[in-house]
Image (cartoon, helix red, strand yellow):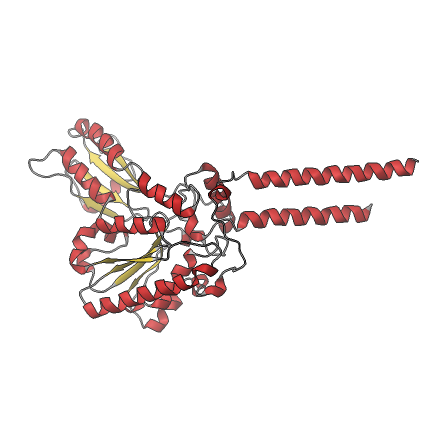
Length: 403
């Protein structure tokens, strides 16, 4: 009887480990970047006093529902006379604003930007709508989200005034992209299209003020080349590289993370960086779903992804742990020292040896759309079957003893 119990225990353990493994390796990092699990949004605070409030609220809410729908920017109207303890009033003091209505954009990291919304001889409704359009849309942000929706990711190159330096940075970005493209077939899950580059010309920097602000830059301060990497729903991953730090090795080290397994051991608080302030409409969502082979907005997908991510950081990830980009202070330094500033886990991720080449591809839409409870159901059914078998064996043994 002891041998029987031991055998059943081993079978149960193996069965449980198989279920655990099948759940653990279901997604790669790129796929996790498309699932919205309650990330902290950008906030657009509209400040009004008792004289301006009656006209502000209906206009603001209507425009917000139209312009900000589907995006990650939330509008909130604050009555400065009645909501004197509102935490967002500190931004008024920071910007020394004393006239109303006024608007301030705040990122998930807490950095703020005063947004002009009043112009002579123009109604507030019109100026607010134009301001909101600029906050969620710009040519390069649109290009980035279009590329990340259907490709592996995007490398953003912000050019400086030095043409030779720009050329070297672009060459490094293209080399890193090529390095990743050559290894895509060996990654845990196939991705159809390699990363692509998005270039902001130095002369067009004022047109991308919001994009630069979200990266911690101002157009007038860009006096060298910068590079940042995006994936998923326009998520920024890794540090902001500048000048001589823009090398093939540094960029490839971050890019390879995107294609790695979601259980690769990296800290999700670092991986799931802040999203760009963008409008993520149904067309982009459909492109992403087609590229992924599953709907990232599916409740069952969100449930399973949340389980994996919570397990990966050893605790509750939403909403107690912020999803913001973890800041890295990157001072200019010799190129051979730059890699030391990256997280230790990222320093070791470069090239095909990082990935499990035996992992089977999972491209089927139906396979990826199976409910999250399906595999746990298999586990329950299997456990029940083992219990029944064990019971039958015990009954048979007891019957033989009585004969």
